[in-house]
Every structure is written in structure tokens, then in C-alpha cells.
Length: 382
Image 1 (cartoon, one colour):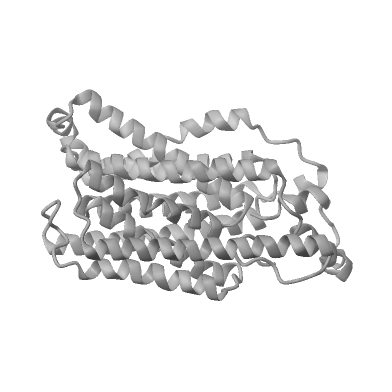
Image 2 (cartoon, rainbow, N blue to C red; image 1 turned 90 degrees about the vertical axis):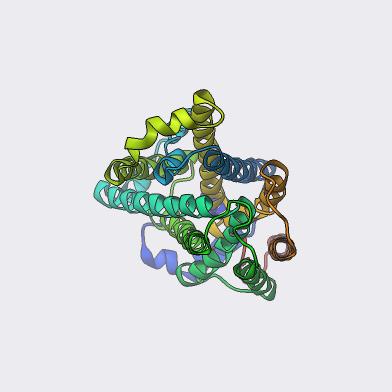
């Protein structure tokens, strides 16, 4: 979340006056602008790869599930969530560091943590279900382009929750991403690939927009939680967040599967799956693995940088999906989709350029020991 170097350089301050003193704020700002070392960049590259690969693979596999005979939105949702035992293995490889006495005093109570994880789990299953409904009714290329709007929602929530500063490049990016998603409303033949009635196309569009908004809110709240509650520096904090919220979300998805009655048709669905029973199981398993890679990567980027940067990396991978959809699922790439994709890429490039400017500014500030305003993209607001 952009405070790794700060946590390394400063001990936890017990007195509120000392925290608010000019001397402490001075050193805090200087530490926050310290250039990142190669280990930090290796972590960022690894997490970014998890996000891009996991997002692309899980989306394409989800489309494959529907195209070859899958009908249950709850099974598709469960496939996105049920892979969290993989994270438990990763958690065992990165156990929590021993805490100091001061760190232990600052830890939130078990009741507060349980409430946070439960709330996040419900939010997770809600927007995952909306994503599943959207992918059911939309061509995968259209679906992925609409998902680019999640960056705009995340920026909006970051503005209110983290006092995110908007530069001209960020505003330009948000406008372009909004236009990119809005263009898809005006497709003349939106259901040409899957032959879905326009009413269901509208449902898919609304659900995908709602899911993107939910995801953007989830990222901002996760960043806020890391900043205010889970102040430890280890990767174990990331894994704990993923494990507990995924456990709640998976339980809710299983409950939804039985309450909806969709479980009654699963045996027929397996039998009628065009690629066979083994491929049916492997499609869901691979979706679960890819989804967890995406979640770990997104959480890691939030932990190391910010929710806005995590979402920007996610948007980077979205233009890849329509291209793969044309190749593997024969989606039509009409003029509207092409323009929407160009605008989405342009919006992301605008973010990347702002990131570059902020990083250069941070290096100069650290080198000169001066105090300038924090980076809008790479640094969270005080």
C-alpha cells in the first residue's frame, strides 16, 4: 500500500502528540518517498502477472463453461470462490512474523476482524454472482470491456475514502473508461454471438456494471482495512484476508446453490456437457485456480501500493480478453467494440503516464530531501 518503507523505518508511536508532531510528520513524508528496491519491484511484477493471467484465464474459462452446456450461475460463482484452499498452502509458506508488544496492543479484536471478514465475504459473493450473470448474457469481449469501468468506480470510492487526488491525466483516464463502457450500450446487434434477447442483454449489462462498482468498492475498503486495522507488513496478512473472506463467500455460494434449486440439475448438466465429464470438472477447477491467482495478485498490489494501482493493473489485462475471445470463441469485433477497446487502452496509458510522473517526482523529492505533495497513484493519502 505504499508504506512498506515507512513501516521499516519507523516504530509504532504510542503518544498521539508525537504522531502529530511536525518532526514526525516530516520524517513520515520523507520515508514515503524513498525509492523502491529491486525486491519491491519483483513483488509488484509477480502480483501484476497473477492479476493479468488470472483475470484472463478465469474469464475465458467461465465463457467456456457456459458455451459448452453449463447453465448454473451459482456453480460459475462457486468456481470463482472455492479455490481458496490453494491460498492456505501459500499461507503456510509465509507464516506471520512474530509481533512486538506494541504491535500486539494495536491489533483489532477478534469480533471486529470477524465482522470485517464476514462483510467482505458477503460483498465478494454478491459481485461474483453479478459477474457470473453478466458473463452468461454477454459476449466475453463485451463483458471484459464493460469491466474496465471498475477503475472509474474505484477512483470515485478512493476519492471519498482515501482523499485520492485527481490529476488531469487521471481525470482523462476516468472519462475515457466511462465512454468506453457507455459505447457498448449502443451496439446495433449486441446479442449476435449468443443470441440472447435484448432484455437479457440489458440484465447482463446492468449486472456487469454493478459487479464492477462492487469490485471497486471492495478494493477501496480493503485498502482502508490494511491501513487502519491490519498494519502488519507480512504477506501473511494478505493471505489471511483472502482465506477468511473466501471462506464466507464460498459458504454463501453453496447456500445459494441449494436455495435456488440449481443443484437438482447438476447431474444432467454434467452428462450433457459437450466436452465430457472430465473436461467439465477440469474447467471448474482451472477457473478456481485462475480466480485465486487473480485475488492474490490484487490483494498483494493493494498491500504493496494502493487499491487504485491494483485496479489499473487489472484494467491493463482487459483489452487482451476481447482479442482472445475473437480467436477462441469467434466473438465479433465490430467498430463499436474496437473503438471501446482503443479508448480503454488510452485510459490505461494515461494512468501509466501519471504513475511514471509520480515515480520520478518521488525520486527527486527523496534525493533532495524536500517535501512535496504525495503521489496520487502510487501513494495513499494521509
